[in-house]
Image (tube, rainbow, N blue to C red; front, top):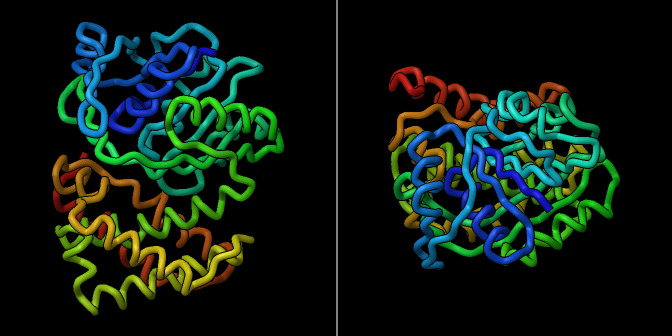
Length: 307
């Protein structure tokens, strides 16, 4: 199987590493970072943290790829998804499957512009990784991946889940992956956005009772909109999950914080808190807390001149 990783930052490279290392598939990493591509091709992909290894693996720019893919794992930032799909149209054949593991929600609408729905597999990953330098990743925590084909092609969806599981990625086929996606969006919509606004760790934010009240209001909105979308969400269950996750990751700075505060990059807020605002409008459900969080993040991007 020929597998492309479209967007080979920390998480994309982590997934590509596991598939190349532990299966018979050939993996090609696609990215736009010249130094990253060059270092990988010259020295191999260096892995540290939970795994210490260096592996030979191909890396190139998306436009340079010319072989038809069996599987494309999309790992770009949400804002770059459409342009990435335009760049790789040439490698998408009639049998190519797409696996989308991006943070947030609403990506399937973009993917359907390029492939039939039965080629789209949505998933959620709980892995943790960082990018130390060009060509060097650090796997900081082992996790899981849930996958479901949203167009009804369960056979191919299960093949993808099996491939990822054999690769050591803790994958399984999930009959209700949208529940898992909404749950993760709620985690990101409380932890990522708020720690970016407050410029603190997850633990520091959740120490405040005022902060917990804000989280409660955000989760109420997520839960109400999610139910209107047909997702079976329970407020108390979601709050318990978020508080448990916050305790487990109390010393962590989430990816949005790292993007905006550390790297001065624009965030994926429109696919997280912003997404529930847009979905709320479709159901005439007010989402004032999510709306102001989205606006504040955009204001902070503007003030900082984020790129």
